[in-house]
Length: 424
Image 1 (cartoon, rainbow, N blue to C red):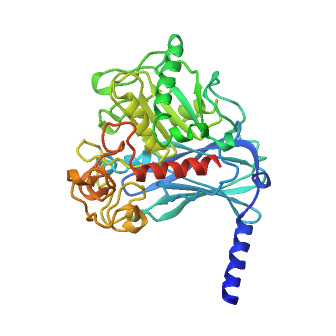
Image 2 (image 1 turned 120 degrees about the vertical axis):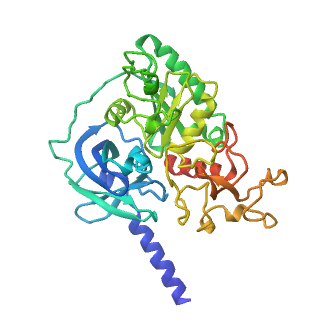
Image 3 (image 1 turned 90 degrees about the vertical axis):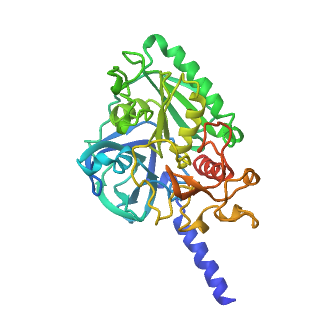
């Protein structure tokens, strides 16, 4: 009994020690840290670029320590005086995907990247972590930041009007998404508004976003491009656009992304945001997304509603692609001797940490892809771009096929958990 009481006392004390108020350590502003991430297949290094004071902090003021073990990287902020952890965030980047391509075997390359943190009241230390092949985090770079540093830039670059598309309340209690128009000229801003409205309405009609629509804010930055469309290098098409997106990223035709991180972040800074969506004025099929980095979708393809929802599953929910028959630029994206971090795929290395509790006792593991198992949660082979060794929860899902309102129970739960955490 005494041991139990001692355990309860220690647990309560630990909880009390971990709790602090946002106002104790931060002001209601955003500190943007730009850096360069460079390396090759087996190495990565961080190089500081600049710091910029931006507008209102849009993240939660309650849940400041990231509890989800997602993403390739992690940033931590500790109070310099006490050493206390006061903010953390997991994320991935385009550089981490590039490292899995064949090109990374032959050259080294650098990418501009950004993390945003609440603007500190006092001196802090910021630490950057990278995962190894076993998904263990290692500190790779750190820097001391004094909020009084006069080299923290305060000018706003690329100022544009902001349009409230779907704004339901307090930023700190909402999931805040800024949508950037790519390849929309000044004469096409009304088209951008209509395209964004159509696609956001589609997303908010999908479970579990539908049930949580009041927990989202969507903002549009009305930033015109000089030309309509986007780059299609293999066709010799090059457009002057605000976010410099391009098809054929990593030489994969449908992969539509941008390496111009600074342009994207300068545009996003016009809004209070946690997540970035780039909407491209094109009818060609394509898009892409990276967790807590940005998402991209074309606006005018017949499958645009699906692409818009599917890619947000990546950038917001850290959901893996469950398909395995389409070509990709990646090589050994998911090592078969390591349990993937994504909630919706498994290599069975540590299935207990995934959806094992949802599989009925009479369902075999692995589960054969037979009609009688269509409605059930099982362990179906094929996912994460490979046909063997990686398994998914259901035979079909929005992360598997071109279907819109079709997230499986595992994907729904992952999305719901993140919505709750970010809107508390």
